[in-house]
Length: 222
Image (cartoon, rainbow, N blue to C red; front, side, top):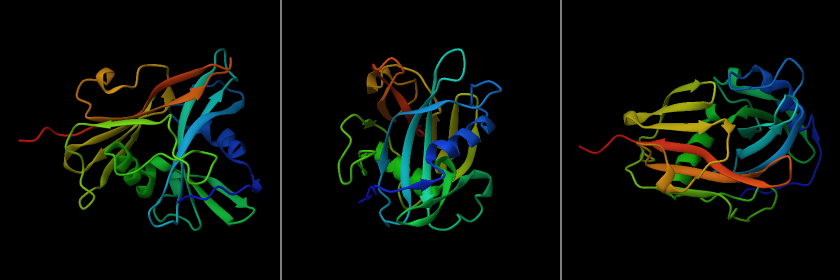
């Protein structure tokens, strides 16, 4: 169970993301600094209790129109070997000490737990309250997904809209980086999708929107 600590962070998550987001191929802002507001998100538990897993939703209002992003992050007590390019930055946590913050799409713990969420083997947790499921996060699964024993990411590709993870046995997991309001029920999923995670976030005008966070495609069974 992830414990939410009420403490200080230096720098804050927002400060880290303000510096990091403009380097991403899916960032839609202009030449100026992002103006970020937290708009939603959820957490997942690491079964080993070592890695913090958070799916942050942030909205940038620096451009001509607001843009909302999904930013999966992991928080570690030591560097993740071989993941220097995925490092968002480091912060000092008032309780846990130094934390290494990574783009979670490149962290095997986050990816494994996200697939577990799609398949119904994990539960989305509230972003701000310890040991509290998040009822606004929806998921579905109708296919034959990667088994825990042979689950692996073979490639990670950042595009202009999403990050696509190639999984073992030909499955793909697509994380929508630029979020748009749209139906996230199973009947409205893209062709070929066999599972999904969807959720809600707050728009700048105070209303709430729903959309797709992630879509899993798996190979048909012979």
